[in-house]
Amino acid sequence: MHISDGVLSAPVLLTGGALTVVGTAIGLKKLDYDQMAKVGILASTFFVASLIHMSLGPTSVHLLLNGIMGILLGWATFPAVLVGLFLQAMFFQFGGITVLGVNTFNVAGPAIVCYYIFNAVVKKNPKYAVPMAFLCGALSVFLTALMVAVALLFTEESFMEVAILAVTAHLPVMVIEALVTGFCMIFLRKVQPEAIPALTAHK
Amino acid sequence: MKILQGSAIFFLLLFFSSTAFAHKFIMSTWVEGDTVYLEAGFSDGTTAKHAKIEVFDNSSGDKLLDGETDDSGEFSCKIPKKTELRIHGNAGMGHQGESIIPLEDVAEAFPGDGADLSESAGSVTAETEAPVVSPTPAAAGISEAELQKIVETAVEKKLRPLLRKMAEQDMKGPSLQDIMGGIGYIIGLIGLGTYINYRRKSK
Image (cartoon, rainbow over all chains, first blue to last red; front, side):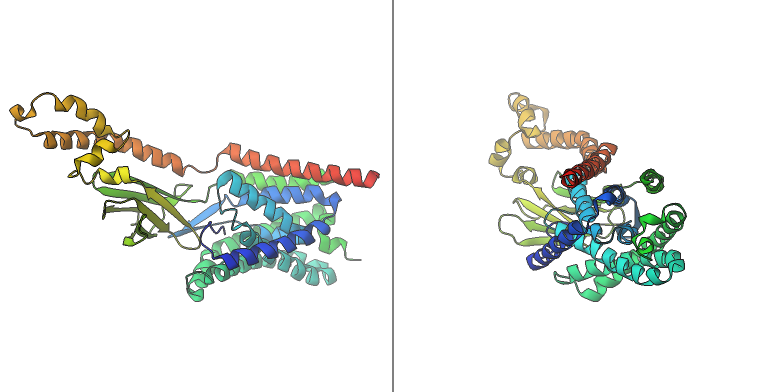
C-alpha cells in the first residue's frame, strides 16, 4: 500500500522514518553476507510485485509479498523493502521520498512480526511450516493494511472508516498472498530447506 | 545451490510479471472554453471513480468549489473565478494528486477583458487575430468578436483529440525499461555488498 507524498502529517512521517532507520540498522547488522543473493532476489520480486494490482471499485490494491520476505529474510526485510520502495519511487513515482520511512515500516514491520510468529511455531514443529506460511502470508497483508489505517488516522480521516476500507480492500490480496507464500514454502521445503531460517536453526 | 533457490523464486517473478500493471494516482486537467475538464485514474488505465475533487483559488487559497468524479473517473466544472486554479483530487487510502491551471488558460474563458488575451504568450488566438483584424468583417455581417469566437471553437475542436492523447500518455504505467533499471540497481547493490564482504573476509 503506497501512501503518496503530502498526505501524512510531519510527526507521522518522522516517526515512520525513525522506526525505519532503526529497523534497517538492525537488518544490516544481522545481514549474513552469504545470503546476499537471497536478499537481492526477494528485493527484486518485491519491486515488481507491487505492479500486480487488482482494482476494486473506487480503489486499487497491489501485491506486497512481505509475508514470504519476512519468513525468508528476517530482519534483512527492512533494507530489502527500503531499497525496493526507494527504487519504485525513483522509477515509477509510486509513493514518495518523504513517505519512504512510513511506507517501509508499514511493509517491513508486519514482515518481522510474521518472521517471529513463524519461527516460534516452526522451530518446535517443522511440519507446520506450510500451514504457517499460508497464515503468515495473509497476516502480513492484514497488518500492513492496519498500519496504513493508523498512519492515516493521524491525518484527517476517522480510524474505523479507513481501517475497514483498507482491510476489506486487501482481503483478495490476503487470499492470494496466503496462496503464494504457502506454495513457495512447499516448494522451498522440498528443494532448498536451508533457505528458511526457521528450519535451519532447528537442531 | 543458490542457483536452484534463485530460479525457484525467479520463476515466480516471471509468472507474475506477465500480468504486471501499475499503480500511481494520476490526474489530467485541461481547459476548453470556459470549462475545466479533469480525468482521474491509476496509471494502469483504471479510472478513479467518485474521487473527491476540490478547486482552490491558488493566489488566495480559498476553496472555490468541490465535487467528485463520476463512474468514468471524469469531472468538469465551469471556471468559477478568473485566477490561477489549484485542483486537488483524493481517491482515498492515501492516493491523491494536485494540478495547477495557469492564469493564461483561465483567462481565455473571460474574453471581455481584451488586454489579457493579447498578453497570453503562445496562445493560439493571438496568432489567428492578426489576419482577422485587417479586412473589414463588418461588411460580411459578422462582428470581430463573433469571428474570434468561431475560430476559437474550431481550434479547440481540433485540439481536443490531441489533448486527450497527451492525457493518455501521462497515464501510461511503468515501462519495461523502468523495471529492468530497478532490478539492475538491486543486482548492483548485491554485487557491491558481496564485494565488500569479500574484501572484509580476506583481510
